[in-house]
Image (cartoon, rainbow, N blue to C red; front, side, top):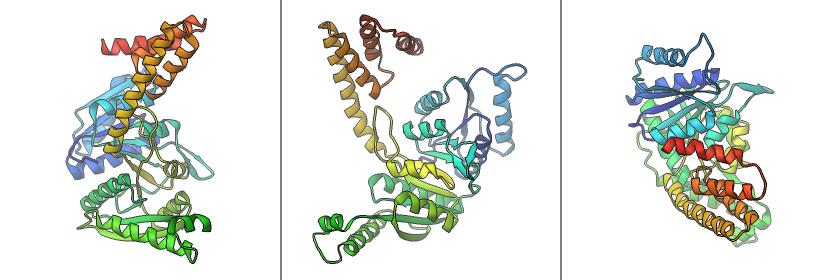
Length: 359
């Protein structure tokens, strides 16, 4: 989280977006940064509402709270696509969104747009749970697995804790293993599970020693079991109003996907979530994906030139799975599908939209 850069508040004017706006106010005033607001509407507003009406509503609210919000914009179309593209273009210090507006059995149902944005954005993102405790930054719980990404999450959480005087709870969950798995890991037959636990705790202490936590009131917590279940339980039991986690794992060009634990936590999210990404991990994978896109596109073009439209279509689809905006692959897929006698209107339209944007 780069607090000196403007915050980006993406909103659709539902309840969770309004709660996200309130959190944006707290952060903007604390770090003395402006808020860029971006409204995304599924379709153009009908009379008597206009785009300007939507801009003015939120701008008036933020201004009344003493927040600089000179940049207010509206987009019409796919919320996920628009927010991701706008975030990529503006590169905010933090992206704020609502986590969803529905409940099932008393629990938040995270919206599909929220999950898609959390999965694909490269910016740190704070998803505000409108049904959870208000985000007052009083008690922050950061769940770590001792990875590079969770180290970045802990550093960001510590920065927030210093700014707001928060209590910082650092949680690690010792993953459950079978006796055989513990034996393989520790190399000893006697008390293998106890040794597994001890090694994890030692690693946790070493991890904490490597992160500057001066000026922070911190509590260390070690729990055993399924990480997602223990994280959710700890949030409730310890009264955290914000959960901070690092996102791990990636698939696809410019798509830093959430790790499996994060996904499971999201399905039972007890409070608001700050999800932190690792830029270094992203850059490494981005380079590999770019090369893979070029290889698949080249293979598709070679197959198409050789008259094998079916193989060509498969290669172009492989490239587009990594980068859905790669024009050579889109053009190739249109040509291959046309040769196969299939309709390719969708891909042709996407290519036309991309050309219009870049042309």
